[in-house]
Length: 173
Image 1 (tube, rainbow, N blue to C red):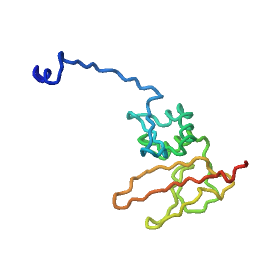
Image 2 (spheres, one colour):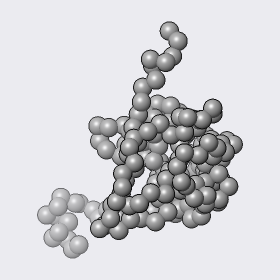
Image 3 (cartoon, rainbow, N blue to C red):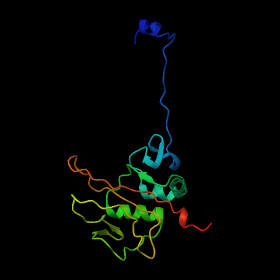
Image 4 (cartoon, helix red, strand yellow):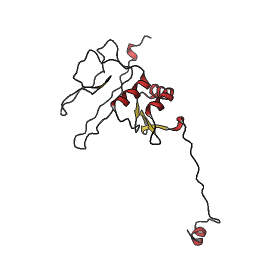
């Protein structure tokens, strides 16, 4: 920018900008926002920088996670770079505590590690009707976690629908 540009833009003296250090703290390592404007469900939690340890972050932010889950009903953890099934299991245990054993199995699933299983092993061309996950068991999960290990190609896009069911009718008045 030369002197004529400065005068045209109304700048009397050149403006100097200094770099300002940004301090990352555990509280601001992850941003929280709505996936779609006007629709709170799900809330997205996404690291603002690379290298955030998902287990360490979740351990230090259980109250924030629980509050968002109770207020909104679903959380999409995006961009945490969980690379292995074991890391995923550790992340879940940090948030939810001890994982339930998969008993009384009603559909074919493959065990990936510990308490981590695939969704129902079903042919790609077939659909699975909406259902209450493990509702037939004596003890059912209070939290469900899903992970995408391999993104589907553009040709074969599949999705898992998650429906919310009101249970007010079953609560004592």
